[in-house]
Length: 167
Image (cartoon, rainbow, N blue to C red; front, side, top):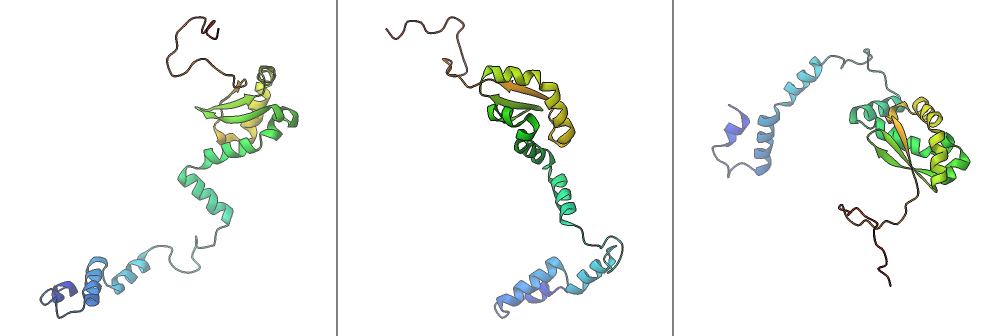
């Protein structure tokens, strides 16, 4: 007969704390049975192999691998190190804007800088592949400056655009 069955007969005579304790014992089992389960687990003896403390870096590496954070963290490191990858002068005129399907998007101050960086594409890609292999960057795309556009919304009409509409 379980402890809960013993208490089912007269609920009003037994305090609520004892009823809760009896319910927990039926759900989770007696403490002695839990100890036996812990003792049967391999590697639970002190000073056994695999019981040495781990370094913080190895624990964090394991967590980042397990949670799938390696690529986002490598991309963040890449964006932070853009000044050393591209050079100090170039980094003043070009910034990392984001990532899209393995393509690193770099926004430039002018089309001249975008063209200059396009010519340096192979050297920059090689350096990124060597220093940040986990970032998953396959290619680079250099974007010019943001200019105002007459296109508003997803649909546009082909043609010359607005003409003498202000007169």
